[in-house]
Length: 287
Image (cartoon, rainbow, N blue to C red; front, side, top):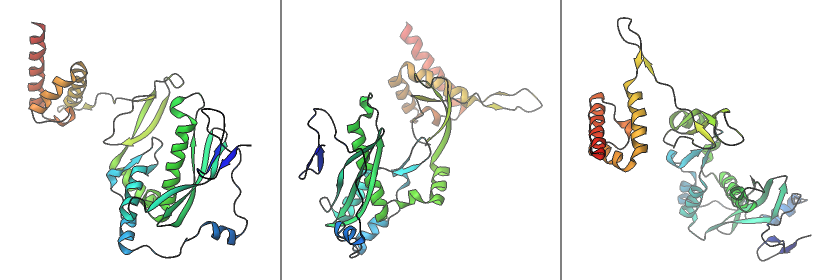
């Protein structure tokens, strides 16, 4: 049995480099009276109107992100900033209720959100870990557990609870997200196909799932002629190659024409002009 340190509220394991956990969840309070005694201040009084305004403010859509599986979420940094804004640094805290416990390769722990000395909400955070993967270690999972618990307890307070509203979710997905097809490029998923979600302004997936590049768009010509390649699709393909060859010089050329990225160049004449300019620079390099 691991020793419990009352000062740190941790179960201590003497084995170097290990994180002690329980194998079973902590027991719940037996009676309502015991539960109330353990959560002093719940529902005792309202926060000020100014604090309520901060807490209930709708989240900025730019502060919301999306998991590849399609669930949207408010970042843990944003929750902390909102709590600091409402109660000030030191006016709130997230404290563990008991130790960690483990279910297979899932780590769990209960936390209580304290605001101005009162328990606001309790919730259990959970996260998976992989024993043989340093990037998904048990210590890393422990940090994720805490952030998940913060998100769940702050939801009870009303912060960014829009992320659980189905109508808000559908509207946000339509405006800010895109669902794309990807191909597995990792050791265990090579060649598999899978649809994933990301923000429209997010970076394309690269590893272990690589985002599929759409095929050339076909546009019909008049008078029954055969379709031709969309010139903008052709431009983007060429621009990616030039950017990969010499990123710094290519970005300088875009900037000189008043553009931030290749996708902004939609005029065919400007594309042709920049292509000739780039070709001239390449020929100078070969002289």
